Length: 448
Image (cartoon, rainbow, N blue to C red; front, side, top):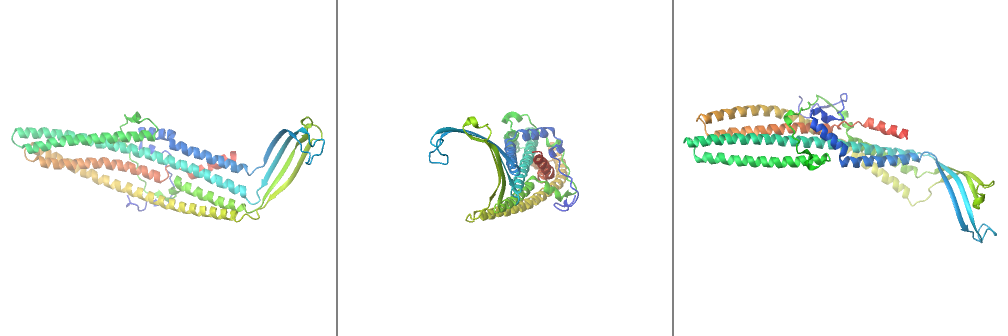
C-alpha cells in the first residue's frame, strides 16, 4: 500500500461508490437500520418537502413561457350615474349588466427573461434534490458510525468481563498463597481492590451502551427501547479494502459539491433575469365574448365583442432600482462561486484525510496484532511462573496490564477502521450521481 495520502487520488477511470455502500460490510442488522432511517427520519422528510417546494417554483416559472387563457363571467345589478357616459333613461336608473368573455395573453420572450427564470428555478430544484441526497448520505453515515460505536462498546465490555474473570482467578491464587505463607496481606488487598474497580468499568460501559442504543433508535425514528436487544460484534464485520487508486472525478459526485454548483447555475440565471428587466416587455393580448346591459340580452345577437392588440412596457425611470437589483444578483453570484470553491477545497481535504486515516489504521492494526500476540505470550508465562512460585504478583499485574491495553486497542482499532471506511464512503459522495439526477429533473420538466 502506498504512503498515506500519496498516489491515491488519481486521474483514472471512475468507479462510483455504490448508492447502498453500507451493504459492503455484509452486516444485515446495519442494513435494516439504515433502511429504517432513510424511510422514517424526519430530517429527510423536511428535505423532501423542500424538493416539492422547489418543483412548484419550477412549474410556476415554466408556466410563464406559454400563453395564458382566462374565462370571465360577471353578472351585476347596479344604479347607473346620471352624469356618466351612459345617458338617460338608463343613466339614473337601476339595471343589470352581464359579461361572458375569454381573454388570452402571451408574453413574447424576446430577451430571454422567462427562459432565464425557468433555468434559475430548475437550478434551485436540482440544488434541493442534491441537498436532500447530502442529508441522505449523512444520515446513513451517522447510522453506520453509531452502529460501529455500539459494537466498540460491546467489544470493550467483553474485554472488561474477561479482565474481571482473570482478576477473580488471580485473587483466588493469592488467597491460596497467603494461606500457604507465600504471600502477605498486601498482595491480598491489592487483588481484592482490582475486582470492584473492574466491575465499575463494566457499569460505565453498560451506561454508554444504553445511551448509544437510544441515539441509534432516534436516528431510525424508533422508541428508545426498540433496540435493547441489538448487540453488534465488530469482529464479525467485514472490512472493505481500500482500492489502489481513487479517481479524482469522484469528488464531483459529492452531493454538497453538486449543491454548490447548482446554486452557481441558479445565481447566474438570476443575474441574466435581472438584466432582462431593463428591457421592454412585449405581450400579445386578445379577448372575445359577450357583453350587454340587461342579463336577458346577454346571449342575444349583437352582444358579441372582441379585440386584439400588443402591449409594450418599457421602464424609463425608476431611480436606479433595477440596476441596483442587477448589482445585488451579481454579488450573490460571486458569493455562490466562492462558496463552490470553498466546498471543493474542503472536499479534497476531507477525502485526503479519510484516505490517510484508512491507510494509517491498516498499518496500526498490523502492528497491534503482533504486539497483542507478544503480550498474551508474556502474560501466560508470568501466570505460569506465579503458579509455580517462581514469580511475583506484581509481575503478573504488569503483564496483565499490557494484555488489557492491547485488547482494548484492538477493539478500538477495529472500530476506527470501520468508522474511517464509512467516513471515506461519505467523503466520496455516498453513491450520489449528479448526472443521473440532472437527467431525471430534465425529463420531469419535459413531461410537464
